[in-house]
Amino acid sequence: MTSTIKVNNIQNQCGQNIINENSNTITLGASGDTIALASGASQTGFGRTGTVDWQTSSIKTATFTAANGEGYFCNTSGGAFTVNLPAGSAGAIVSVSDYTRTFQTNNLTVARNGSEKIGGVAADAVLSTEGQTATFVYVDGTEGWINIQETSNSVTGNDNLIATGGTITECGNCKIHTFTGPGTFTVSQVSACATNNVVSYVVIAGGGAGGTDNAATSGGGGGAGGYREVKAPTTPYTASPIQGYSNSPNRVTVTAAAFPITVGAGATAVPAVSPTSFSNGSNSIFSTITSAGGGGGGSNTPNLSDPQRVASPGGAGGGSPYYGGSSGNGSGNTPPTTPPQGQNGGKNPGSGPSGGTPAYGAGGGGGAVGDGACGSNSTGGAGGVGTTSSITGSSVAYAGGGGGGNWNGGGSTGPGSPCGTGGAAGNDGGGAGNAGTVNTGGGGGGAAGSSGAPRIGGTGGSGIVIIRYKFK
Image 1 (cartoon, helix red, strand yellow):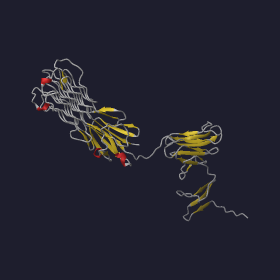
Image 2 (cartoon, one colour):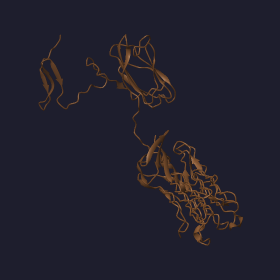
Image 3 (cartoon, helix red, strand yellow):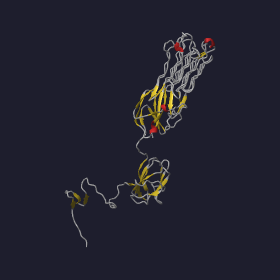
Image 4 (tube, helix red, strand yellow):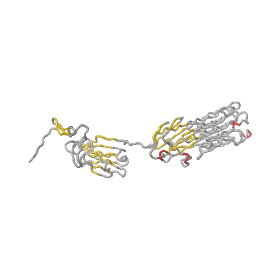
């Protein structure tokens, strides 16, 4: 015997309809209610909404067969594998996603079922893009499974160092901030990995000016700006041989703060008759790191007893003028750092004009890794050797000393004294010194005098500050 209960509405104790039949429409629950199926119950007849149920409790790491209506996170970090599609029926849907963002290394193959097609082609599909997600819907026997939605990039939270300032470039997983003038390196977020907050850097001061001349001889080459570098282990590149990571005080660990950047200007030479003719470059500064300006090259004056003719110390020392004794060169690495930020300037060949034929050669300015060469009675001393670094992503030469001036006494000209990497050649035969290369910290070239005609030394090259860190 069958019993029948017929009602139009069922209300709760508050008088709200929880089941309501109205013109072929049955409404379950009141506004704001949640309709739940009992544990173990299932629903039929409601249809799908074009989405899948993601199987978050079952991460796939090996070949498996997908089921209609399901999405799978696939972990290929241990190796490539295959997902087999189920038998196709109109409206069937399957999604897969790159769980570890490793599809580009270990591919995921999406295998068709039997002779069915994928996108109209009777062949398997291969997912090979980092972070790729794809959704396949079976349409019909002509096209088979069609990919209806795909992403090709993985969007993740960023727990790496984030900073602004200077000119920003990228090299692999590193960002490089280059400052050719004053600015601010602003860190808005530090890395969750503490070792990634130790940044690599190159800090180079302005180069010293070449020595001037007013006594028919020659001025010394300018010393290079001080060179300081640290290469952090997390930022691979080819560093200078004098990078100082192993000396812990050289390391800079950034915090979420603003770091003012000072980029030292190259020195401008002054006439030899000035009582303050030392022309050192200006310091460059990043955080706790200061590189000292290069020492000015020594100058000759009409009054050979004037003290300003001696070269000055600095990041790298200035070269001695022709006159002034064999100790008239400037000391490098002043103030001292470990490793040394620069080397000594070159000396002259003697203490007076008696040895000055056929030429009067002054000492070269010191470079980052090499002393300036001594002048001789035939040529000016070469500038001290600079160094190279690939912190920017390509090898660049920095911090060479300026070449010493050379007056040959007869007015004829020849090649100038060679400079160190990034420095400037000294003049020969009567003329102003050449300028050091900008943003390398190179020393200026020494001037070569001419009787009664003062000559000015070359301007030092400006400095630079470069910061590199891991950003992904």
